[in-house]
Length: 68
Image 1 (cartoon, rainbow, N blue to C red):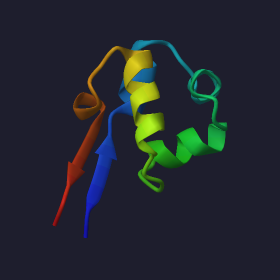
Image 2 (cartoon, rainbow, N blue to C red):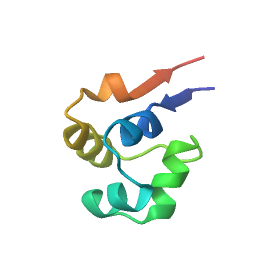
Image 3 (cartoon, rainbow, N blue to C red):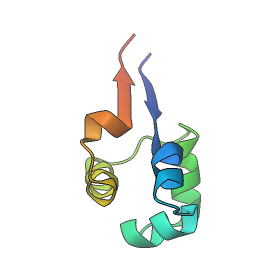
């Protein structure tokens, strides 16, 4: 089974950004950001790119995908 983890919470803290702030910038709900942060929801490629662009990071630096 595949495993996805992320560093969104870390990058939000570095940018003094709340979940709500990030949700607004990504045009999604706060609940979506919460689910992604907790690895309960794998974001679409579009959302992953939006998050990467906001934090000026590569997708690979924010998201870690491990196939098992």
